[in-house]
Image (cartoon, rainbow, N blue to C red):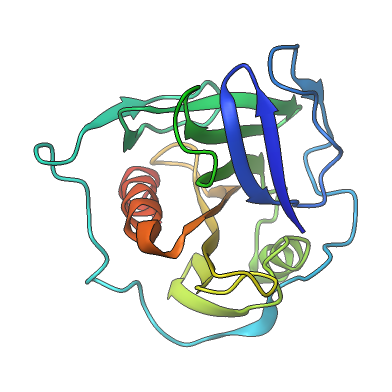
Length: 211
């Protein structure tokens, strides 16, 4: 089910992730549990196909791309988005933060999504990472291996609609000398012809979060 959230920060499109519903933008963000509390409607198909990140995915180059750097509180890393985008806090809790990202008011209402960062409880081993990935909505797509600590799924058809969708579930360290201890979920959709915008944002996130 594609969700459109309207509020003071714009309108964002993304696939519901099974977390507790968030407070609409313009109000204080709801406090939520760090892990999804509902079974995803269409989880990804396991196990992930072997592979690596596609090195042909584009990256932002400014110019000609008009971009800006955002550093949302609690995320732990900076990344690039189009200059007319913003990321609004939509949920938070102990060891958990979620942002809706997309164009600011007056922009497109058909592109955007969510970025979630949550603690991966110790031990954040293969079994726990698999269980956490299975709890994420992925439109029923087959997961692909991006790296040892990341998987992704993408398609140009989401629930029978011609839309590009990309979901990434990755794990990283909150500090260079720490063990792997956090999960990053990136889930965004766009008109098919704007797929590269989502790929560019995801590549910036991957570069900054080191997965």
